[in-house]
Every structure is written in structure tokens, then in C-alpha cells.
Image 1: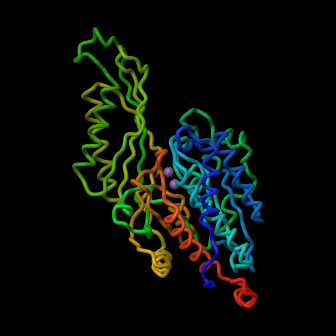
Image 2: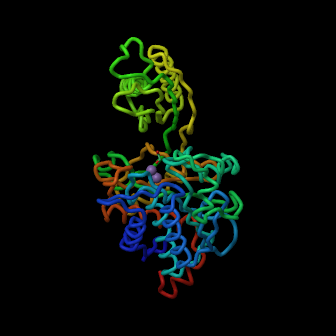
Length: 423
Ligand code: GLV
Ligand code: MN
Ligand code: MN
């Protein structure tokens, strides 16, 4: 065996992915482990149990981020492998879970090979990456890097009205460890692509150069409820119609500007939401993204104009709330180069790309060199119960991750181990 590689097992990784996928499993496939729900708590229990079995020193910080650390030959910052285990309500087995469980597999392989690394190696699972229940997304990693004060994060209200601090305490993960206490010398996140590019181009490894900018807004449109049969169209103040017009115009805007602009209205809630009543209120979300901050700002400005115009025409009032706003992030070029070099050295086809999805790595990039490895998603599907990545692809990314971690963490007992025939 090459001293720079590790005896990782894709079978063991897949067994853990499947076991975690049974927690919060949906009938017919997929998973619902929304952040800080009972299912998330059970998923965390499983992961913490595995961390302890592998001999890791487990700590939980004040926002519920989990860290399992394998000591190195000298103290200091860790080589950190991280991601998340919360899911959207209609999630799959891979988004986030892959990064955390691949981290555990690297640890298992280090243990099996009897390797002592110079740097500690830490596996991290960050709280509420998805942002489906609490906004913003990447909340745990944002707090970890000092981008959001803990008290503010703990006061965050869920879409179901629950307060984050209460939910964290209810599942037993209001930890005591200090925020940012575990420092990263480098951060690696291994993730499924969640889009169609790698599959379409038959590329094995995506070398991620950065993450596009994200802008999430909640609009509350207030009109007046009235009788659907008796109220002439010209006399309505229909919040439902205003929401529908905004949704259609925002999609039209993305198509008109073209390129990489994406715009999504993923949630619209009408009140009173009845067949024969003009809606008095619509609460809707708008998700805008682009890899270029300047273009994202133009899209945001045009979106604001659409909202003002439609609201005036439909005679509804508008309240706006920013749910998340993150500028595009570029990963550390030297580390990105290493991802590419290691993947190529292992014989994999590679492609450089930007991430369309948000990731904890974009937060960790504020405090440490960070990089990501992508593997193909079948049909480009994610945030979908049919999300799937083939066994061989999972193995390809795992091998790249393992080599990168060992390279970065340093191999303290390489000579002793080699002379024992352990490597
Ligand atoms: C997080 O999964 C996102 O919405 O990109
Ligand atoms: Mn993810
Ligand atoms: Mn996701």
C-alpha cells in the first residue's frame, strides 16, 4: 500500500449511510431529518455513538455543532472533515451525510492502519446546514466561524414557530464547548454534486473552486379577503394573485438575464387558503443565486422592482425580510489544486466547477483553507427522496478525501509503520 493512501472501505461507508438513512426514513424512500427535530436528535445519537466507537474525543458546542477528534502527535489545529446530517423534509441519504460519514471512514482507516498523524483529525457535523427549518442556512458553521453571535442564533425562530434554543435543549444537544474552540488547519468537505454536470459529462470527481452567492427573501403580501363570487376583479386586493405574479416574473427575470442566474419560489402560504375566498395574505420565499456578486446584486435590484410594481398594481402591502445573504466564496487555490492533483494521481477524470448549493465549507473558508470534492448525482437530483450516487462514485471521492487528509495531517509514524508492514 502506498504510504500516502489509506485502507478506506466504501462498503463500510455505505453501511453507515444506510443506517443513518433509516433515521427519519420516509415511506417509499428518502429521509426527513429537519434540523433539531426528534429525528435529527436520533441521527446525532447514532453519529456520536460511532464517533465514540472509533475512539474520538467528542464535544458539542453551544449551537449543537458536533466535533469528534482523533489526536495527532502534537497538539494544535485539526485537519477538519465536515458537513451536516440535517436534511430537507424530502431529502435523500447523501446530502451532508456523505461528508460526515466519509470523515468517520477516514478515521476508521487511520485506526486500522495504526497511523499516527501529526495534526489532530476532526470530524464535524454542523447544525442546521439546510436552512429548511431555521434560517439562515449553514447556521451552525456560521456561528462556529464567528459570523453570527451565539445568542442571536439561539433566538432564531423556526418556520414552525419553535425557538432554536428550546429545540436544541429538547434533543439534548445544547453543548458546553466554546464556539470556535476547535480550530481547523484545513477543512475538507466531500459532498454529492446535487446537480447534473458531472453525470452529463461522465466526469468522476468535481474539483470545487467555490460556492455561488445566495440571497433568500421572505415577502409578506397583505391584501383583503373577500367573496370569490361577488367581488369584481377590479375591486380585489388579492395577495394570492400578487404572489403568483411575482413568482412568474422572478422566473422570467432569471430566464431573461440567463447564464447561471437561478430563481426559486419554494414556499407560498396563503391565508385563509380557501377555494372561495380571495387571499388576504401571502407569505412567500424567493431564493436567488449567482456565482458573481455583481450580477447577483443586479438580480436583487430587478427583483425589488418587480415586487414594488406588482404590489402597487394589485393594491397589496409588502413587508420584506432577508432570510439569508451570503456572497460568493472562492476556496483556497492551493488546496483546490491539491484536490485536482490527488484525484488525477488516483486516475480519476476531473472537472473544475462552482457549487450551486450552499455548504458549510463556504463558512469554514473564512477561517481556514477550505476545499470540496464532488461526486456525481444520478439524474442531477438532490433535495429529492430519489437522490442517489453510485457505490463506485462514492468510493472514488472517499479515496481522494482520504489521501488529502493524510497528506495535510502528516504521517508521524510512517517509518515505524512501514517497517512493521502496516502500510
Ligand atoms: C443548502 O442545501 C442550499 O440550499 O444550498
Ligand atoms: Mn449539503
Ligand atoms: Mn442540502
